Amino acid sequence: MLKRVLVVLFVTVCFTSCKTVKLSRNIDQKLATSFFDNQFTGIYIYDVAADKVLYNYNADKYFTPASNTKIFTLFTGLEMLPDSIPAFKYAVNKDTLTIQATGDPTFLHPFFKDSTALKLAKKYKKVHLIANNISDKRYGPGWAWEDFDSYFSPEVSAFPMYGNVVFVQNEDSIKVAPNYFADKLEITDKSYGRKELSNSFYFGKNRKRETEIPMIISDSLLLNLWNDILPNKVSLLYKSALKPSTIAYSIPKDSLFKRMMEVSDNFLAEQILVLASSTLSDTLGARKSKKLYVRKSTTRFAAKTTLGRWLWIE
Image (cartoon, rainbow, N blue to C red; front, side, top):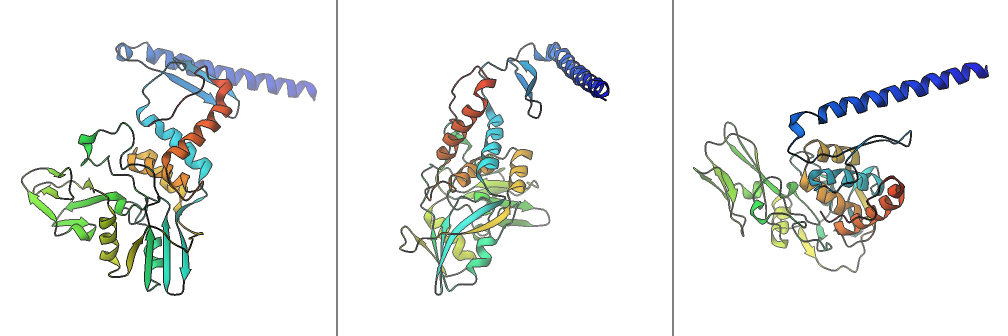
């Protein structure tokens, strides 16, 4: 019996080793091609279950990570967020609902179309919204200012609505969401865009591609968007004697993470970090989530890298 066990172990080790050698050989062959002559490349493949590095090429060199940081964002979300996304915190006093923002990006988003907040708000005569509880600026560090009207640069906010973009379709006719901007969109001969310092949008009359144009987020716009769907019911609060503590949940977190990773969505990535901070305190801020992730990952992976302590800026 012992002999059979030893034979099985030997065959398993040999098989695993052969697979690793084959993997390394295949990657080496790819890296030897002329395609990689004029670029700096790094690869690190780690088998978590076996606690083993399968391949290492320039892994201890510093790179500009770009959207690879979304892997860190994903890890942070998995570690810090519950199974379903905390849509908002709320409290009820007779006929009044008080909602406190958590940074959930799915509310009326063009892809997710979550309406958790709207369904609850419809049940009350008055709705008070607290959305000034964020320390982050509208753009993250390193964002290019000239991208203000590009689809990949929606502003970060405490209570996003519609993905913080104006969504335009032009099939048989031009359709605009949110409806609040339907009569504020200028149809022109240009492609599409927005004025830098105002929510003045334009769209090319011959453009057929679905288009997302970021809004400038402000208290007045947030109030207008809410009153467009719930007229004369919603008001903004900056302080409340009533502390919202009950959590309402929206979509499963896996659905949010999947979308963020599949299309490499900058807005969702930023808001996931804001969301994660809502599990730490009522004051939202992506930096809090980043600091916690760096501390945890440095402790967990310190023995597997020679880079030492690192900073997550953007």
